Image 1: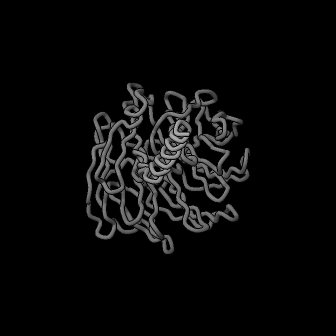
Image 2: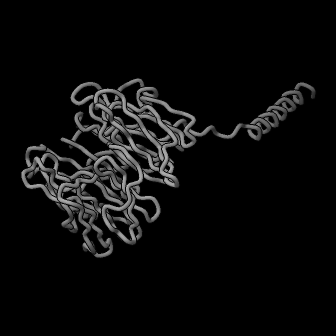
Image 3: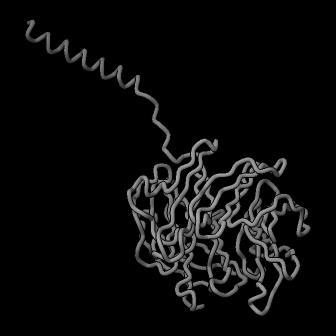
Length: 349
């Protein structure tokens, strides 16, 4: 009997031990790049690779070239932008004509899209199964521009939607995709509204729309205006659009020589960059230019939770910076080194 009882006793002890080990397992460690800010750095133009910088929410951790650190390879030239779809980051590498896909929290490579793209610019997801990529095609040809539709289940391009020239920034909201047509090497003045796999509406806005935000039921579109070198200079503007009808509610113009960029929002307040200053405007009572609150020429700008994040590209050849300002007093509170030409700011939460 002892010969039979000993194995049984050992087995029971093993099961109890395993059960105890399971109960005492440590909680999962959060992913390396969760709860932080991601900065896309374009990198040297036509030479070398773009990179991504990570800054933790508490500003205690800064890490450069995180994709290369995790995967041992470069992203390519130029890292134009990135967008999120569920747990994935879709990194747009424009000159390399590809999208690199990584887990947004660990940055481990998962996939790539290397066919069907010519000059990709920006990505946005709409639901769990579709993504959209703006693409200039040949930037010298105003007739071949399109938005590529991505099947997120297979990470393949399922179709292409012909659009007006110069599709740039893209925004997903309430089942619709909004595309600002800044104009590539020229200047356009429309926003396309995409539903499914086709353009459902085209909205005329101010010249050279370069950024968009949504507040409630309204889309605010910043038009940079045509610059002096175009030979037909026009004023910068903010166009307010009713999303439910896709109709322009009102257009607010700046001076003819004013060319604003980087429209962003925090609460009901709009912020934008113009002539070396950041301006603040209440969206319920827009009176341009608004109040100048911060000095600086910024390449990218995003506001969130009472803070303004802005990048300084410096000389566009050496490493730039991420600056953080407290909007309660408009004072700079942080200054971090980024990569070469830091062109995008994204919140990875």
